[in-house]
Length: 166
Image (cartoon, rainbow, N blue to C red; front, side, top):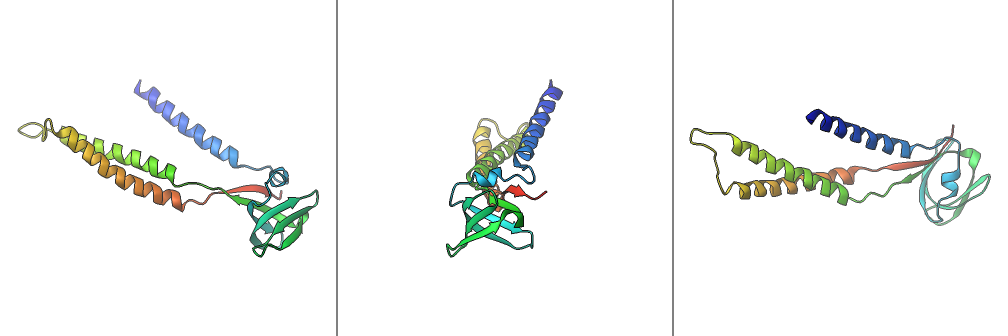
């Protein structure tokens, strides 16, 4: 039974990782994702010359990419001169904070429970008041985990590749 649970957990983690990788891939040489962008979307454009800059998407035609620079001046690039187009993924810090708090609570709670389960010569260290100590340790762990999760999540900067030259 335990092996089945471990296998299920590993398989689920593998599928989640695989779906994340598959969703991030782009078909090289296809402009559909760029053409479908709403006007005003912030994108990063890399040209074949190696120049790379951040622009605001304005429009896309069959052979031109129309963008706005930081001064709101319209700039047009031939699509043949573009090597890659990327968009920053927005990610709130809330999910990392919640995951960190949950993991931290569980770690603190069960670590103190394991410590209390150790038998001394006179029996367990705590009796009835043990649950209160477990919860307190869990709350300390939740605070540390929430802070750690928020810092890790804030440090992640995901970018979605919308176009890539083959």
